[in-house]
Image (cartoon, rainbow, N blue to C red; front, side, top):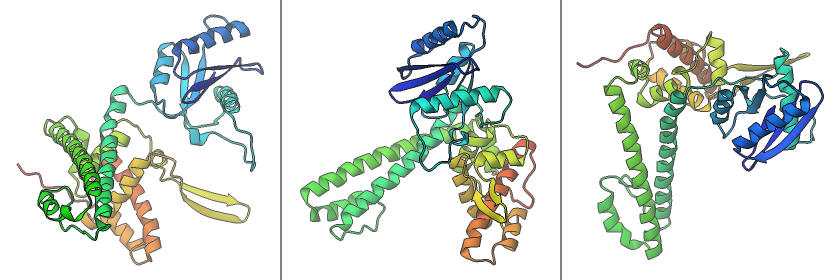
Length: 358
């Protein structure tokens, strides 16, 4: 059985492994209807009551609750990476929820026959999934803070006001009292509402950051503390890497790690044409973006490390474009070095550790 999960309706495609297929449409999230469909399909296909039910659905906004609920029912469910599902390459192809559900059901049969037709995602535990919420919320709040600050600055420029103080900072009240009278009443009210939202976002950021510091002081995050021992890795970077990648995922080798981060190469070789298309970008976007930022900081803060010397020897003398290409390769090497540091305690070659003050 395959699920095509929509916002209002779910399409279910149920088969017996042959050519017979039953299709159902139920309300989104209706667990009773799902079990009823399983029972009705079993009666139609005349399967024994002890028959194993295999299901699948694409990873999306519903997350993992459906997978866990199906597993509690004894159903063998898998969650599939949507980007790994094969599609027709015609310029125009029919696409409906019913066709997508039928396609998933067909590929599920092939999957259980031993074919490698897609990528199956690994389920995080409930605690690991919950731990990811905090860094993701902080990321959104920081974007909101920047958005409110930029909006206030743009509104002030309409009247040629360019504050030399930090918007919403400790000196803002004095500056606003001196220059706010130059603006219209409606504009002043709009800016003050933006300021109220800005202050709320700042307070929520401070609360999250304070909770982080307390957790580190109490020794609740040993992997985060271990990463922060390296020069060039701060609190935010260590927190995101641990909870997005290193804290709960297990890798057999460096290639699996690179694939998970979307830093694996994607060659295109057909006949005489051989082109390197760049990295796949199929993995964790947050961790990949952060690693590229950390790679630039690593060059500045860890110039004596083997990774930084490799980059300087190969890319530093080239143009800006080649340095941008090289920094992605550096990010991949840095991710592997950090993984080995956390897993085996192997300090990256030539890297400096922070001095611990007692």
